[in-house]
Image (cartoon, rainbow, N blue to C red; front, side):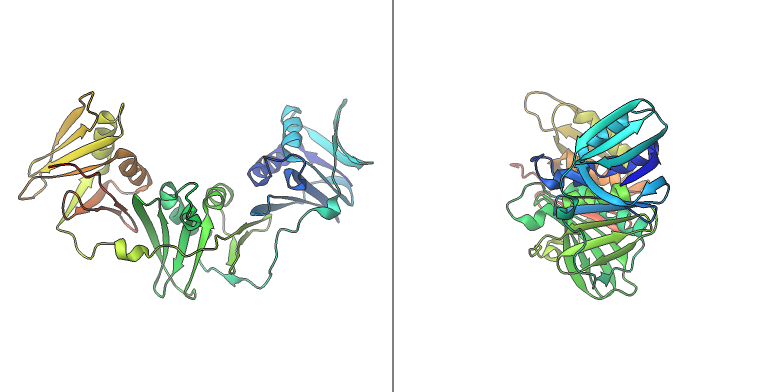
Length: 356
């Protein structure tokens, strides 16, 4: 195998493949990137078996067909140090050799024939939504996806395709985040995408792509790349029973004022209490050792005082993902879950229960 390629093109692709490599065991073939030249086209693959990326490059010169593997982390370390000029890559004996001007680097290879296949089943169901809609929807709920929960299904996001809409759902048991789209033509289905895959999808796909799935895999494909992830095998909690049927109060509040006030009182401690009265809102830290408090004057058109106590991170996560100048806060009682809404996105948050 041999090819000449622009350094910046090669570096961008090798960089994008780093999250897909096995990091804990450098002796594993999945710590390597697979490279193959076929008919003047370069194919690169990276996978840790759970998630994978395949990229295609036509902008290569003086190519000779062949294939090889190389440690992905070591390869990136070399490419980053090279000048922004063309580089030559070739296989010699059991090494991948990288050359630029008078510089030469050799990295050992594994047997490319043993590299795992990325895509399994080709009979996949098409998910008929735009890529940008998928990315925007999962971006909003990403902060609510749990980490390392013993219930594996909570370490991912549920895509719940219903008859009239598609719900994108995540929960860390303290909050439930849901964004939704109209369903035009997709059959009803449910699947859970792991958090790692959710994060990588947001980095990789800005243009339109083909999205497909089966019971075990999700595949996203463009002209230049193919991404896959294994889906989480489990049953997501019945999230719809958490959604309140009615709310005693629905307040439309200015997002910027909320963010400024919350940040002002949470510089030292994240738990806060917000007290609502007919003509004002008071934000105060729940830290017993210090006092942080601020008040804003606002006509809320309510008849009684009430409060919400909460981890401020949940509020800021929601507000950072909202698109409008105003958001809706809905609630029934101070110690019951409350509701945050912005357009086709809402979050239900478990409060901190305070002694009255």
